[in-house]
Amino acid sequence: MTDAGALIPAYALYGESRDFPDVLHCERLRDRARPNGWVIAPHRHLGLHQVFLIIDGGGEMELDGERRPVAGGEIISVPRLTVHGFTFEPGIEGYVVSVPNTEMARLTEGEPELARLADAPRRLPAPPLAAQAFTTLHEVRLARQPARGPLLRALVLQILCALAQAEETARPSPSRPRATIAGFEALIREDPEHRSSIAACAAALGLSTSQLTRHCRSATGYSPLAYAQLLLMQEAKRLLAYTREDVAEIGYRLGFDDPAYFSRVFRRVTGQSPSAFRAPFVA
Image (cartoon, rainbow, N blue to C red; front, side):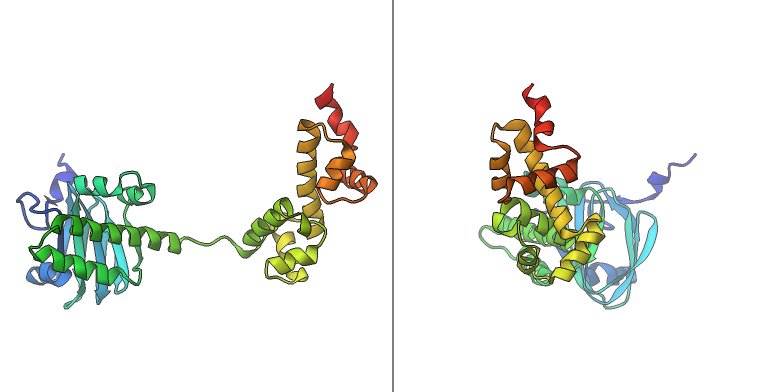
């Protein structure tokens, strides 16, 4: 049986068998694609991580056997061993930077957000400054100047950081109700002044009271007041179990001016009086 992997060419640079010649490589897409009829046949690199920037034009990309369109304004990260190929529209504008594995490891050492870029291919909207970084990298690579190597590394690091930031930006943000509840919880737990006023909490979050109520019910099933009391009673249970403060002091600390009211709320939420809850912890 034929090894399918053996049918996929593995290059240093596409179409070249020689060893990698430099700290890194950067070229215009048209310079590589035009002599090949705008087609880059599927291939892989044993020792390179590549990042493509599509500035203008488009085409089709094959990535590990899946075909998908590509268009201007995209940045594409292709780790080593990933099978990839392109059919570009004539006149495509963009760049590809090729980074040896050793340089990639050096640049991302101690930076997990960057190191994980080598885990899997990524295709993202290009950050606004990406085109300038690629253009400068291309110019510096062709020049012979002092500190050329460190400058090339700094520029490719800038591109990797832009790629990581683009990935973070592309992640779905938490739903508005969930984001609201995170802020509401922080206010209740950390700011005593907001514990007695749902209206003050809503204002601090930039919401109306009715909006806060709607978000709270959507995310938790509770009204804001009931959810605030649930949070406070969780803290009350911790204080009852692990401190020797008396019940009234705990109530005052949590914003309850009336110890009897604190005890009623605690019983309603937990099904026990504060003293009954504490008893097993002091026995």
